[in-house]
Image (tube, rainbow, N blue to C red):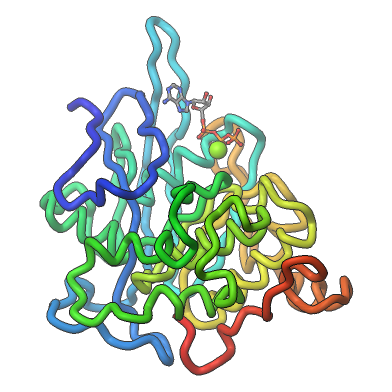
Amino acid sequence: MEAFEGEAGEPPGLPREPVSQGSGRGWRDRGSNEREDGDIPKRQGRESIVTEAAGRIALRGVNKTYRKGVEEVRALVDVSLDVNPGEFVAVVGPSGSGKSTLMNIVGLLDRPDSGSCELDGRDVEELTSDELARIRNEKLGFVFQTFHLLPRTTAVENVELPLIYSSRHDISGLGEKALEAVGLKDRAKHVPSELSGGQQQRVAIARALVNEPEIILADEPTGNLDSRAGLEVLAIFQELNRRGKTLVLITHDEAIAAMAGRVVEIVDGRIVSDRKVENPRDASRELERWGGNGPNGGAGAGPRPTLEGGDGP
Ligand SMILES: Nc1ncnc2c1ncn2[C@@H]1O[C@H](COP(=O)(O)OP(=O)(O)OP(=O)(O)O)[C@@H](O)[C@H]1O
Ligand SMILES: [Mg+2]
């Protein structure tokens, strides 16, 4: 089967990552879900296809080979991985080891050549294209190294993009709420060029959160950020995780990986280690050491993320 883009229900207005051109079955887009997560309001008008343990990922014997002419790259080799609801897993490994390939498969952006990928007990191969589109849009939130914000669109409008395709009835104010949760309410009306890199990434996180996903998949989200902005992003992720979100974070940075609860290492397409982090570094605490006034410190400082508050996403 050929890789394809533009599956049913795909938000055409959303910026996208390129679809891999490998041997295969491909999917693409981004979105979110209906976890009842503290103050997160329950979705209306839509029955859940999730029955229990929302946010569970199970890969079994996944293989993915890219072919270009006679050349073959085995990007993933017999990868099996379980991520339980509420876990925060960092995926590390050298460049070209298969991390993004893994994330694209978990995120339903690409298909394995063989093996299975289950999300909340459903084998994604068995989903209809409508279900697939819905799961991508409702269950998963994506954050990438490059922020993929629309340049002439304000922060709040960027955040609200996924809602255009949402079946929610009441979406008013959700964009502001998501921005507030990442400490950027006061930047809602600014376009990306008026925001720092760290702020742009926080807008991208707010966009990933706006549909209330259970699972957040982040591929090198701190790769374009300085240390402080990276810590701010991690502080948000840690807080989201404390609030029950399942997180899979790809990073080259061991110090960032040490903020997760578990580190999975991939080398040459194979998982070579999988270990619990005994005392994860606390990004908020480390940010305090930087002083200043929270995210972005001096110029362009905004309030600290308000996930702790009663009404963030
Ligand atoms: N669309 C593609 N076509 C051909 N080969 C590909 C494609 N995508 C990835 N690869 C190859 O598959 C292997 C794994 O790539 P992948 O992007 O998953 O690595 P990665 O661990 O994310 O690397 P990085 O840390 O540099 O982002 C690499 O050898 C890469 O060149
Ligand atoms: Mg990558």
